[in-house]
Amino acid sequence: MSGLTIVSPLAFPLTLKSGQVIETVGDAASSFATLTEEKRGHSHWQVAVRMLNNALDQPTYLKTATISLQTALLMEGLLASPLAVGGD
Image 1 (cartoon, one colour):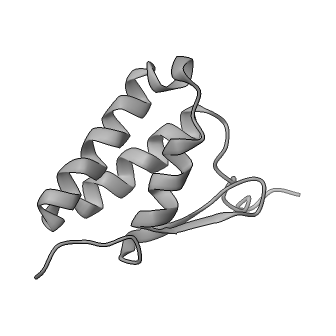
Image 2: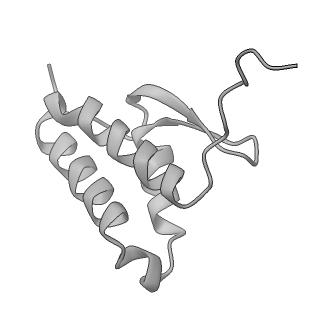
């Protein structure tokens, strides 16, 4: 498998509360570019950026990178919530 590019799909798409969907490596990189310096200092963002960089070097890290981004988005309250199951 050749290296990843900005149009390479993530392991799975990530839908934000805003309705935006992060689907590609380029989308993920663009989302990192919008982070403030303060947010970039948070460990969950540092891990997400590092894992995406690892995936760019070794595509086998792509699923880990996607999960790391999902975790960071969830911790920031940006990830869309899954549909409620059950309930009244």
